[in-house]
Image (cartoon, rainbow, N blue to C red; front, side, top):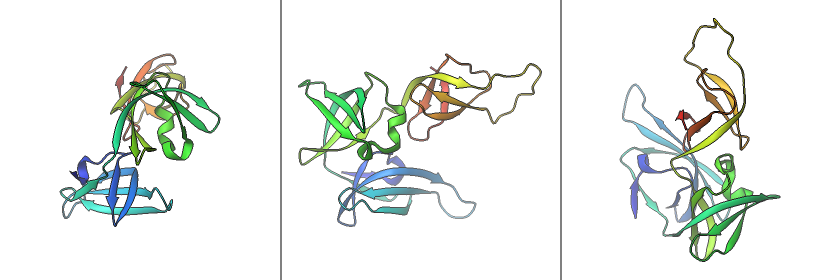
Length: 186
């Protein structure tokens, strides 16, 4: 199945140059001159090598034929993360390197999509946004002028994000899982 480069998401698996790749990072770039493009960092699943490629927004990428399964995240177990198949109730552990920096969005009972290639788990796709609780952030000093930059916050999973100054400890916030940016109170 072909998808446009602008529709590719972090965690997607694509076939490129005869290999199977996982998208690690994606950035949309709109230069002053020329057309917009997607800068995509990907990792070869077999070799473990990384590749940074630039695709025009209308370029087509071949999405790998994988078997998607709805799973529920249960708990971390050392260097692994344990998921349960929602149809068979089978528990499947995934290594940290398969999940990468997406682990900061995992909270108990979160439903995700695990992708299987030749009956082996090879990756995870998160929902577009997740709600997480703020466990640490700076307090706002009265009379301090509002700035558009926000303030740093640490969420319940250990993820660090920038939030608006009105967010306090204990608030729930929605975070975009592609960009790691604050969306709204959750």
